[in-house]
Image (cartoon, rainbow, N blue to C red; front, side):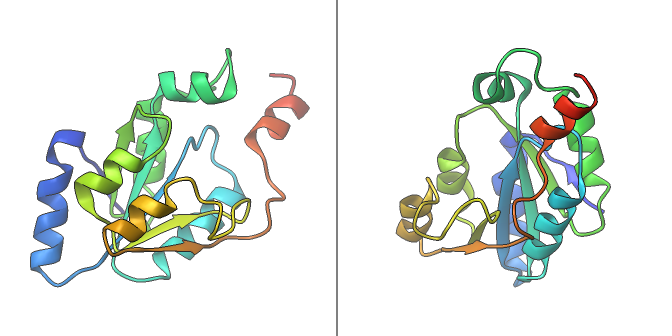
Length: 155
């Protein structure tokens, strides 16, 4: 079970982990209503080893990506739910359109994306490689979608 970390303290947390010999994996997403695809993605990220940081899009960032009416759940509640998962070590909220700035700040050993990406089309791939990291694709096929789920329940 992880904890929610302020952006301003994240580099310090990562430095302590690295001093203890840990590697760092970064996963990210909106996580607007947790579903089994999210759980499998995060478990797959954790299986790569080391400490797992999950970066969650801020409410404003989700609105920019998904449109008005989203997120269905506020950022602090989404962060609390994700931090309660056993496979997660830390959660941080970010406002940018992608995690490039976070990658520059913490230089993860691994950045993970779900199966809706390939290693070649991950938007932040060049940033990860520039800092000596690698990109991995984890999780099950993209058969689960919060947008589709919300549509089915009439949101």
